[in-house]
Image (tube, rainbow, N blue to C red; front, side):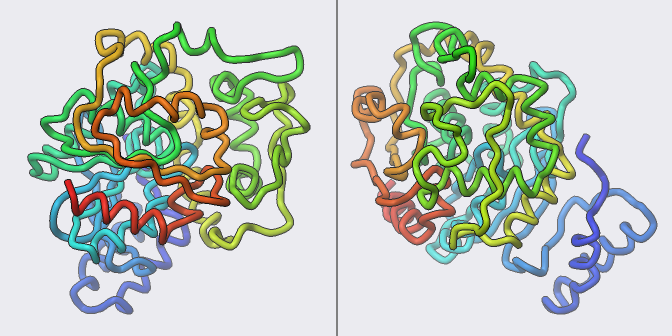
Length: 370
């Protein structure tokens, strides 16, 4: 079950609830009272720092997911990537709500306040797809558009593929569509490069060493990852000269930049640190530990096409674009209703955070046509 503790920041925020109006005071006072006596985590709440966003816990597919939501209207589900959480969509929640949509950003299983099943095998792509279908049921929604970034895009693509009756369109940021989620050419890990000095990042993320390295200094982890994979970082920054996507076997790939890019603040980093202090990295890394298993489970859908309208958005400096350029160029064959790709100059991997206004505009334009 999800961790039932609160951080000092959350206690202080709950205590300051009166600043957001009388309508929020009683629920937040109740939450603060629960905290004071060590009671259970509330099932819904509002964070005064983002008072227009409502948070709640939702039962779906046998687990509880934490979701952040804003707005009324046609529903869009926003799936974050690795290593992120609902907060990665902070710039989109309000923009989509103001445009007349209901935006819901869950913490994926294993992340943030959502449940973290102990069994490693409960983190396959089919579990994530089941979570998204169950989320629609819990929200009393017949259909939604699904959007995703990074692994969230892989989930969004395959969810739209398997359940076009429930997900009427898809928006993918960074990874292109791939058959079976990981390609048709064989068990994914058998195709990933490795040398005596380095191995592909998806192989590294399956190791206990990755978990220890990422959790060792969370401030450094998030400052490093947000900087080094962004469009603000020089090519191969912190990679020790290794090819794109490769990690030194000694795990020494994290840097600590002197300053952060303008699109992410130290306060933003603090929120990611807080979320992963709560959850740890094990659940998040279990996605990578299931790559081959997920690929096996998707065998029946080899060469199946995505039949719903689709939008692909990516940064021109995104490492994923470099790695999968041939697939990006051909993905319309598998996604016949794919709109023209939106390629963002100067943008790295953290698409919707690095280029929020452009991503918001592209998403809203697309949503108004589906």
